[in-house]
Image (cartoon, rainbow, N blue to C red):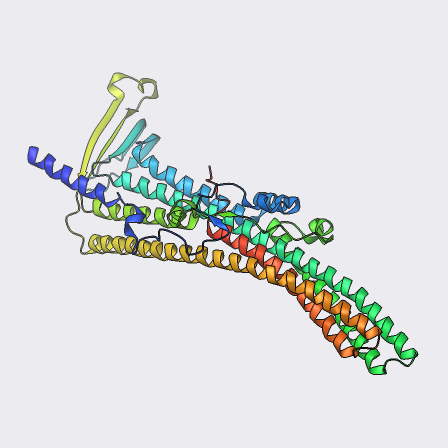
Length: 467
């Protein structure tokens, strides 16, 4: 008996060791100790706050708050969390006994002609009721592993929700920035239309006085009309962005159109970003945490497959009353009970359990490989986002100087043209270049803000543990 206890304890210890996993020890290569980028970032661990507040845009903040409350994808993810929680609680119910109440009124007559000797039919009438109990004793941890698998799957689903929330906030911020970029480019186009109209008036005046050719007027009008032709395209792009934002908010476009059509300045993107160290990603990014929980869930599945090789022990019983005479139903002589301990051990069923165990181990290894791939992707996304943000900000320094010099060139060329010192082609080139420079500047401001959003998303910014 003592040897048997030692053997059972060894088996239980072996099975329990299957689930004592930490995904970090399955990393195919160590996490880098530092990031490649070394500017516009700090090594302080990012706080789990609402990163979009750093933009200082109250409209963006209100939109994200509304999206978190109303977005249908996020609400669906929340429901998946509830489903996983219910399944986990269902697995925990395996620790509890199953209790049932049965009551029957039996009115049964058997044939008297079933044997060679004829007999009178047998009539049985009685009332019976009993309380039944069935309880599986978790001898080798099968219920434990099922509950653990349910718990890890529940945790993974919670992290999936956090990931959907982060992606939603980043997607909404990115589309909002695109909207403001289009609106800024619309203002640039409208301001250029005014200046181009003024230059067109100059060429017409000079043509009427014989100081300019009809070609100058035609070229000035071509630039003017070309800029005006870009207005409908920009307005269509603005309307499209509002429609995209409406879907993310879970509302119809008309519900947000009025508060988004008025142009506003682009969000403030120039800020120092806290990125922590690469290893912090394992604590912050929901997809990495989800992948780690998936490994633990698959490890529990291996534990379940191992316990299928071991015996099971359950205890069944019932107690109640049965009587032909309802008036004597609760008499002592009407009491009936049974207690049935049950021991079952499947010794052979082909290779079904072996194949199930092999499949569980393969699924666990697949989860490990998925985790390693997710870690590599996370590091790559952060490195790329930091590089993009850093170089976009550097680009803006030159673009702003370029716009300033372009304005000087345009002003000088117009002044020289009015004095007859240069031809209109010089003015024409300066106009086109100035419009291009300003559009590029606004576009780069927007892409810089989007690069910052991508960096926050890559870092797992805005993450908050669901309750």
